[in-house]
Length: 169
Image (cartoon, rainbow, N blue to C red; front, side, top):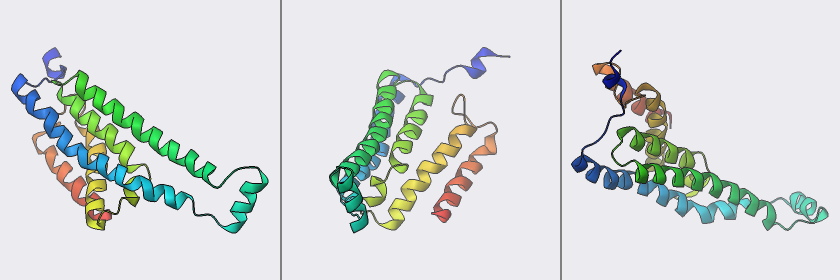
């Protein structure tokens, strides 16, 4: 087996100089949508039935306590994913695999938390973001370990996945 075949694929210095800004342009809107959705998410978490408010009062909790707890979990998941993605790209700017892994990591933090869905985005734009993130997560498994498709026609799978996820959403 040829060791070069499975070696870590590296970008040239010129490619790396463009890769970071391009990655940032792709993930900045996702981060922005998450941040835009935080106030509405918190507002929705404060909507309780009278029975729930009575139950919270009986155990000595304010109405804000559960909302703050749930918001902290949302922020923790997103922060861990975002910081991990940024550190990966910062520490390994010439590694092609890192850009894909970092995008997948950040997409997990964005689409599996509530604020994205409360961001006020148009439904079509929201569906496109989620479809791209989910298709990238699935595609990730087809291009490991070196961000290359197994066969030359495997890229058709990527297009099919993206179209299917858009239609589903």
